[in-house]
Image (cartoon, rainbow, N blue to C red):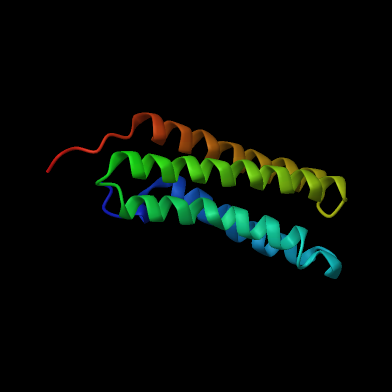
Length: 122
């Protein structure tokens, strides 16, 4: 039974990926600290943050679903910044493919949750 946003597999996956990207981007050049590194970390963290914020508002179905849409937007933004990272050769191809796959799976999970979520009356 889901009692908390922490019980949602999509939140767990998003949080895990954000932490991995936080550590991964520490290897970026110093000149990227306030630009690309910051963007990757912030947008990846926003995915799980939007899920948790939406969970707190889940009684209002439209509001919860909007937060899931916001999370999908941040998920897409994460992919965009990862594309820059691979093009700048800041990450290896194998790492890029792995984290991109994780990010894609999170997007699919968010889409499915958004499609299937129904708030029931108490």
